[in-house]
Length: 436
Ligand SMILES: O=C(O)[C@H]1O[C@H](OP(=O)(O)OP(=O)(O)OC[C@H]2O[C@@H](n3ccc(=O)[nH]c3=O)[C@H](O)[C@@H]2O)[C@H](O)[C@@H](O)[C@H]1O
Image (cartoon, rainbow, N blue to C red):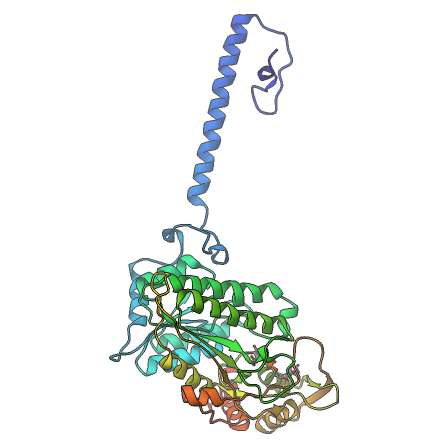
């Protein structure tokens, strides 16, 4: 008996009866073969059916090595393209056409609205992840829509989506603010920092370098790149090779990566090192925000102190000052020199500190909040844990002042007053609402 004869005629069933004469055996073989063909065809049909109905890969996986078709994605279509074009179209002559990534984030919302108000075209991109309350991000999206900014829901790791956006709109600038923020959270979810701040940034640079024309890119770096440095104030010329957190390390990596794209492809790149940005519509994971929430609830707040029992301090910078710095960077950015992935000449590469130049102890931040909230905070003071936090930050802004016209004007007390006013209006429905 050949081994073919060992195959069951019906899957799962063996016939072990008598051996039939040759003619009958031949007939049986023919029948078995045709049954096999039938099963194979059925399997093939099911497989093809599965391919047709299966959903497109998730955005985070649709990177540059993925050639899945655009038509399979949830974006696209003439109505969608119309919204994208309308939002990106400048209203003033000579206005910029800006793609703002992380548009529904704290800084992204403020920058997008400021650009739109002065007549630039703005298209937002945001993945609305759950790092903090997505309802706040949706509320910011509502603001953006009322200002005429359409936010595409998508991920910076989605190369197909980015290419599509660059096909539909000839962006002159990209304001890249999408990132995994937060210093302490990096210990809980290190992968998200690599995914957004490194892989996502590379994906954006890859698509931008191949675009024709290439946009000029301004992106968010961080004061945390100064890490364990003790020389103050922090200057752009200082070393940045001793980060204290993975967050800082990914932001520093971003600066190196940006430099290579500038060097190889002629992309115009400007990095902005933000110093602890705060204000209305801010991020709930930041101390000033959750201190406010906890003080109002009567919950104990933990205030970190340095090993010598001194106060930890930050160069807190108000959002409106940061917005001015971002617009200054966009306005002074020279054009990229390359096109379609080929460098034609040297392009601009810049890094600036955007801070307030006056560090304030965290204990003082708490005192101001107590005054504004008219409530005493329940405090627990504890040594700064080894979780990525540094003891102090302090910006030297001479360069940004000279080249971007950057001039911070809001002190911490004035800025927190505006924040508290917004907070009470947004979360407690207090009548004293802020302007937007
Ligand atoms: O400049 C930046 O590039 C970064 O700024 C911000 O980081 P930080 O300056 O660390 O702000 P934030 O967390 O508000 O802590 C403020 C202070 O409160 C202290 N702190 C914090 C928590 C706590 O429970 N107790 C406490 O004392 C804490 O030790 C610190 O001294 C952004 O979050 C970050 O995404 C990045 O943009």
